Image (cartoon, rainbow, N blue to C red; front, side, top):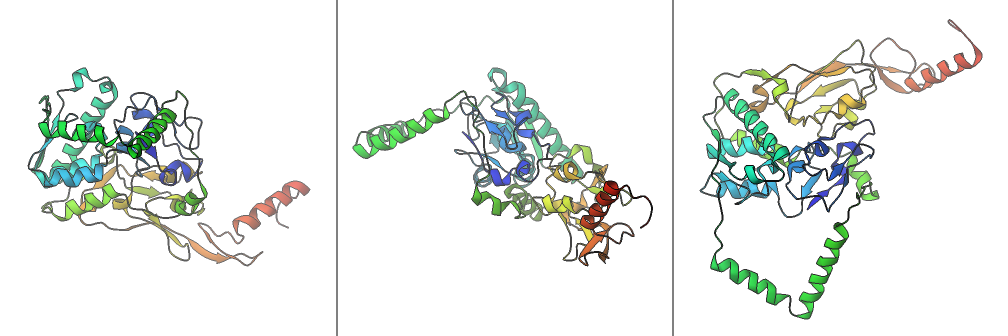
Length: 368
């Protein structure tokens, strides 16, 4: 069953956020975000495929019975290279693009079992997503000059039940016959009944979540990606690739003519890809930390921040912080506070707003 950690959802950082990737990918329409600050989930409709977990840029959604991070380590240690919904994942669409690339780099070859998609009720959404991830991962691996391969094959893997599994199931059954087992089973049953409703369960931020909102966090999938890159040979030539082909990171530019130095973009950035200094005199950008959640674009009123058309593969292997814009740091002539500006403005934003309001109220035009 899918769960939501509200403090990690980018929609919790600003009402301007338009992120709805989870809603778009859900094959059963169990997730709705259109009229809600945070995603609302219909637990009775959720089939636990994990596709929403994979597309969530900040890992706010997760399955309570499957962890892509744990799967990553188990898969790397395993001698096999097959990934199948009948073997080791709820659905291949539950794997995010970064983990797919990381596992392929380390295993050298990964096989996706597509044989069950033909009879799967959620294949209309999940199969195109799997194929899209395959194409993106293959494109990036080629740009890295890696010989690692991902294959799509109709393996139709079927797991044969073993006698040990029967023993385990019987032990589980008899463990529930005692009083403690009955109570435990009753609580689990009531929990499932509560979930199994046809109503959307809305989520809200709790007090414990508020303090977490300002924390800059590097996702687990990005840490694993960085670790995998450290263990493979660097390309002899760093290529420049089309940024539109990347779904998990980006390069950015800021238009100095339209930027108002409001500083909202780096304040809401959940990963710390956008940052400034103690004086708020600039905006820096680290492409490797960017999770392409788009919230910096959503909160930028003048639309000064834009995506670059290309991305340098060098950023994967040799991350570099780029300076996007620098501001003038001044002291307000009216209230004497220090503020940043992208012009020759002598008043801070608050004093300027108060002056404009007074001018409008009293009909004053021109200089006072």
